[in-house]
Length: 558
Image (tube, rainbow, N blue to C red):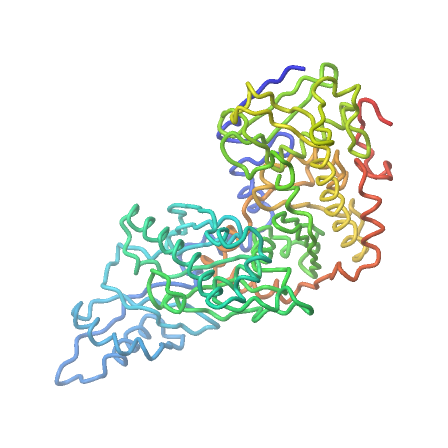
């Protein structure tokens, strides 16, 4: 069997369900014109803004107090709104006004028709305010720098969450937080690295840090707790209660962030221990809460989190299906990166492998989308059976045994970027089958609960990096997602970051966040009696009931 190793092109087109960079924006414009208008309107729809107060310096004939003078000057620009300020700012206002000869700009944010004064800057009519949208991922943190006036994305950067040094999974971090000083260290790790990235962005674009006047952050419930310095102890203990579900607007200085000290920080609310702000951001980004038709959103990370509904109602649940689907179970499994296999096809006649890698580099491992492709192709070509077991006569000399476990050589040592063979073990396939069975069972359980058949779903949104590169055809083949027309599946990319961006830029989107939270009904799978029966039936490729996957036709079916 020969192998052809290819590189992934820089721009990935929507072919076989792949994501084009413009796809999300085009889809969202078609389906969510109301909120998209709010997000792109650059005149008056933002909730963070600057104004130039109309005021003159004090004199013997005008001895109005400095704070009162400033508020009066702001009211001339915003006559219909109440202006509030925090008392600590009163200590700074006299010196700031005199330093700039009363030629200043007031930075304010709107909250329920009231404006909060959060900072005073020297007058600079041609200089914009900026904001940060942050995806607080447990593995990767992504930061987007935005112009609050034009809504332009200035730059975007990402980094591995430094909390990984404490533990790669959320549970380890929760246990560490219970130790003396543990919570403070976890908070400082992510905060200090975030500040480092903020300073780097400011230097790169010649922006004063005090010109960054707001932040919106979305993450799972544990990540939100750790970012805010809240004790996560009870999140993993029955009855699984967060410290807070909807934190109020927090000031940047309270979190020791290196931006305008009084800048508002919007942290997306969570619904419970297993449904965090990243999912609410995903709902906002997908626009499913704006549509009459029923949609389904799946976000695959540490867990598989699912939401179904429309503008009238939303139901959500979460379950453990993520690690294998991210490539985290296979021996050669890796997160997406240079040299990682993300696409596999196998010639049905010759069993020749065609392997595509990221950035045209020699293969060093395989990511979740590549693993799904590989197992789907092995099944379609008869190299594994419906149980996911290797078929020796079809695998030929590529099948070997190591420590009593069968494994298939996918990449030979001389073709590998590691100098060693890349292999797929029987245990790797077994892990993927358990994960795909869990995913399909979660989807089946939630649709059964609301009485909506799969063919009643208008859009099936797939969020996250996993969703950007997954081939729906392969996922259907292994029985991970329902056998629906491919156009039903819409990959959305990083919806946590996109939702945070919308919440930062748009007053309407910010209000929608809390309406979404109040709409959600959470389905607890741990007490669902149907779940285990459905799970057992789904532990075959594609399923024990082949009639629900009519389009899956292996070359040599059992």
